[in-house]
Image 1 (cartoon, one colour):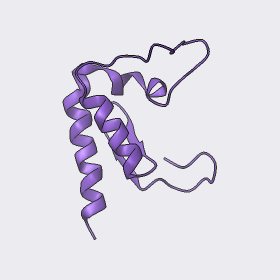
Image 2 (tube, helix red, strand yellow):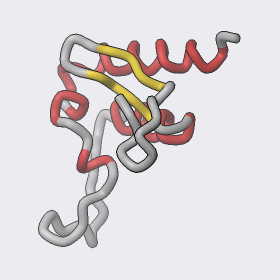
Image 3 (cartoon, one colour):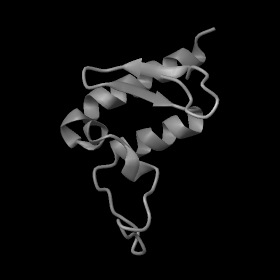
Length: 86
């Protein structure tokens, strides 16, 4: 995967059986982790699907499915392991 603006390769990425999971930085990875790990995902009262699309709403459907939660969290752990490794 590459950054769409600069065209540089993204370092925080791993492949799953559903597709590539990637993040721009550790904060982005934490945001995805918290969203996937949440058992209840509520929208803000101002949210309107026709006007506002949040970053999390634009995630691929396979990441949002609860049946893939464990696999996605393991993939996030693999990416975090790359951050700690020299």
